[in-house]
Length: 358
Image (tube, rainbow, N blue to C red; front, side, top):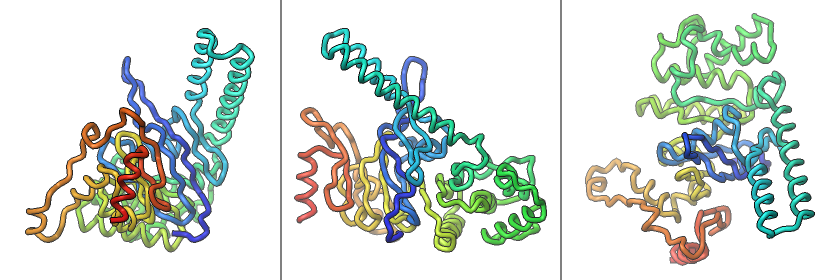
């Protein structure tokens, strides 16, 4: 991890809700974290917990419901729904006599200003602007390599697409950059004229990595880049990302559901469950002192190479209803140890501290 602790990306109370008829799916609900420049930040959790939605929301493939995302200190996207809901609640409180008309008007004016500012930031950092940092400095490696590569385009056109969108017209420069990226990710320049269906899964993922790296980004969002690959190819892709991060000084948001892989690759890890971050700590600290019951259940599911130990090992099952009692006090993110945050209430925090001292 970088020693300067410069915050490159800040996610503040991110909310991403989806309408499902009369109901609403809270895919991401109040997620907050910082990513420092030069570090690899792991986001881990079971399928459906909101990891991919978080990554896609950051890069604005979705318009977020609420919260804000800051890149290099500037807000690149913000949700307005929370402000609109606050205005509705203020009007309701006015009718019930809980607040005065002056207080209501002042509150509404303040939230309308925030809505206007959020819309202005949204327009400023629109992906239609070819020179904005979302295109030039933030790139994404998608989970399914074959689905993210256009089958009608050659590898050369796929990798060069970002440069073309940015306005680069020098074909010789584009070709040289494509060949350089192919060699960087372990392919050869002869592959440039082939189509995606002519490659294996691991090679397709390398093409996806080359497409992201050619833009010389500062931040890469790697959305489960190894989930569809076999074990040996997984190791090759992870090692490639590790080499690129050191060689190019990349900052990586690494999304995965395998804690063992995330531990090997990440400086800090955030554990997600049902749209919320339940624990956040450095990689070594999380494995040495897991606090949240869900984190412990994930760790117990990591297979061991010793068949005897693996056979006799007891799995930890997480049941949020039985493992928590929030009838008196609800949970919030608390710093249990320096740099180690857990979603818990005061009673659980005392329990975790007692276990740590033991």
